[in-house]
Image (cartoon, rainbow, N blue to C red; front, side, top):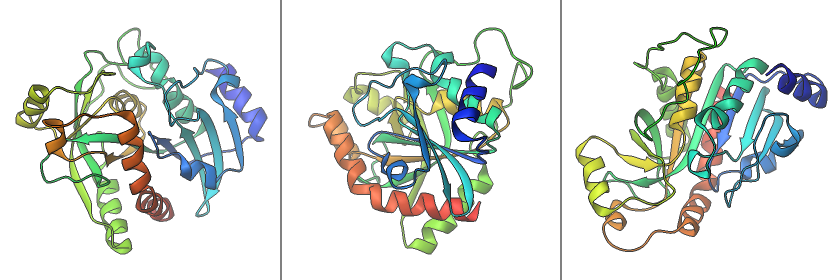
Length: 266
């Protein structure tokens, strides 16, 4: 950790981020538009390279709305064969660099039948069905306690702030529970039915490990999902990663404006 932080500080002239953002599939354009300095993951000690289409794989540092912001343009996933500890390491780095608020974004499939493609869903809670947890193993007391409370992973005050920002911009947002599977295969119709019965509103393959670590580290977390398909598509018709990217591209204008308004008001 010390080696990673020292490398980043040296390269960025001791940039002090207060807000961190992890940009999911197809949502990395914000980091292209606002970029004072960028570091590819492959250059950063102990970071791993992102291999997923639509993920550039770099840390982007920028001043946005008079706030110091650190963005992950793309993430690493459990399904790529990395450990839970490896994919959540950047969140601990953000904490070490001074980040206090973390905005997690992703592309997710609809489970709630009221959701439409390109909807934005504010995550109110999550269900971890990835059959693992990034806190397994020895605990580092410098980051958090052994058994962290998970009552309010996604901070209610940030959800309320995001709703007000969306209202100001005239953007309709959904709210719901994010269900995380390990992937990389998409869900079967029977699995979608099960997720709906058990309380999931959207399903994806990321975010939850990062949210667990962020909560453990004491960061305030806001989660936003870009819905990539209507729930009916889960039981009829095929899904593809190209469809995910296309839906994210459709939503990216309102997504970007909402993120900027949230940053402005944090």
